[in-house]
Length: 132
Image 1: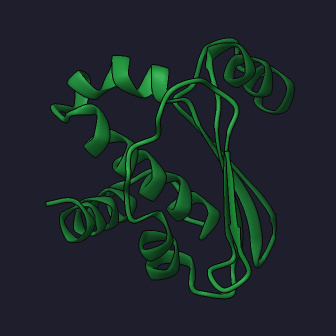
Image 2: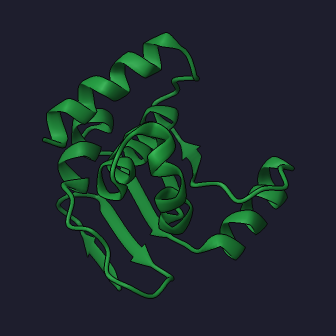
Image 3: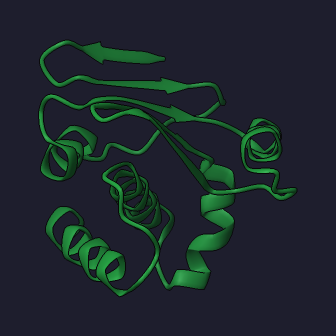
């Protein structure tokens, strides 16, 4: 499945089986990165997530999200919904809410934020706005 619209500058690709949750990805992306940021969002499984993590981050575990900025106005986010489902309980969230949280987290990294209190505050504010 691929959804590409030149008006929203977001492409969503799924390389796994199953349905994706209906979430306001475009609205969240535009709120954090703006309308002119070109973003690719890819939903992947455990094997590909681990391979990407090993290759680009030299980490040997299955991540729930990976963010790659390509330049000031272009980047890519990979979300592993299988790992997200396993980890959602650790964050006291259901799977759908945790995917929104991960997407926000990845967008903030693409914006240049690093882990810390500022990022935590922004994540919660955006989560409250986009997931009721």
